[in-house]
Length: 399
Image (cartoon, rainbow, N blue to C red; front, top):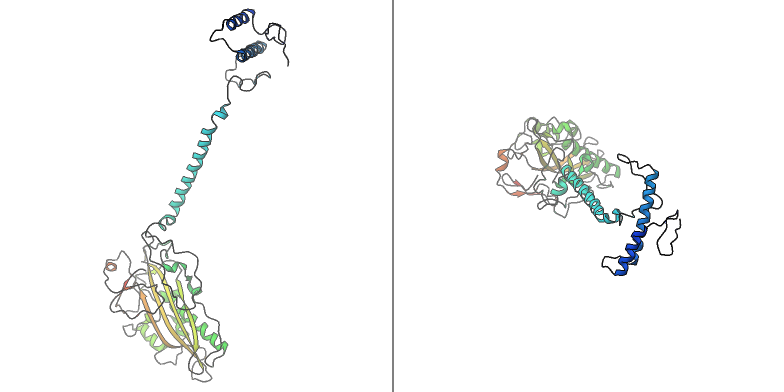
């Protein structure tokens, strides 16, 4: 839409009449000629003329609509001659851009903070494991199989807040990374040795593994029932072999202690916390007397236990070292496939000391007797060497 300007410089409306009255225009000219301080300069005068023209057009549009009010209704959209925001100055979006950005950042940070609090509430170990005294070095990835005595000391003990629980019975223990149950008893590759074929050596290795499982992992054995499966694997003709173990089960004592071979808990004092026993160790073999093969086993078993009806978790650690022998029945008067016991020994961590009833009696932190030990300090997870026989009752550095 175009406009024309009369000879005196006043803008006209589209229908012809001037947008500014004669009196208004004369007053403006007079003020400009007098040099009044508040007289507008040329750009401002033009802006005022445009404003007056647009205001007049607004009034005409309002009269055309009958002067209707818009209370409670959405205001009408601006007419084509009303540029958006022409009376409002800079757009509010530009003025409020920074506050909006700040609100958006603050909202994002608040959401992250709330999420972090929820995660810590569900898994407090994410924080406690990295506090002073925590144990961030203990990884949760399984260790590779042990093939020889380790050369490194086991990881450090647990810090505050890392005691075992029913949900995490191996929390704070090096056994957390050990294999579970029979998976921790791996046998080496069989090779001919001692005049025994590769097949015979393999038979000796597998039988020794079954003996370890039946003696230390079978639920019936752990409940102090007769370890029948283990006894079936042993040579019945051996002096001081299977028959001696049977007698020790019936009449346990200091000299005939079935715990030297079998893991058995007092059923009225402790039961397993869950179904997992952690195992770590290795097995080797070598030729013995001509026509025989000797198998050497060295394994540590970690048992989490609770009192019947309770929820306090304790751990008992048992280390076994034994040597079995498989003889060639073509050369010796033996029962084919049965193992003879050459030697066996055990070390225990966290059980009543100098009690010879053939049962393990774990101590719990809540027991008064658990706080009264003054023997030699021993780490039951140490596997680099075989410990000497302790004098008296040792004090455990951890369980």
